[in-house]
Image 1 (cartoon, rainbow, N blue to C red):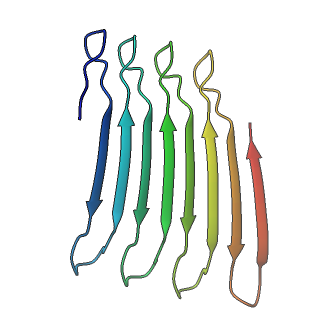
Image 2 (image 1 turned 90 degrees about the vertical axis):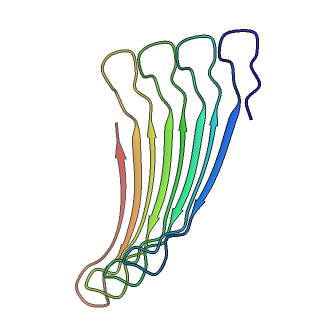
Length: 137
């Protein structure tokens, strides 16, 4: 639905798409919810994307949840992007559970990101059981 506002293209657009590919190689369930709010400038949008991907019975069975919020600001691409991804590779060599939370805030210059990565790795029962926590500035 679009509801034109005071300006040229002040719209609120909600898109919900569910994709269910069949019994092929990559059986995925993908849910995307995007809200776009074109504002006063060229493309000042608020976009929320929630996607859940469930690839099928292949080598790496990941479950990936991505939530990203994009807020293009006053400059070219001043965005705030939050990504939460959980990956669960299957019964192969590297059984890992990886949680990635990244917040990107491109600043006044080129792109000064603040990225927080929380990864928990559960590599089998023998050699290297490690828990990693990374903070990148």
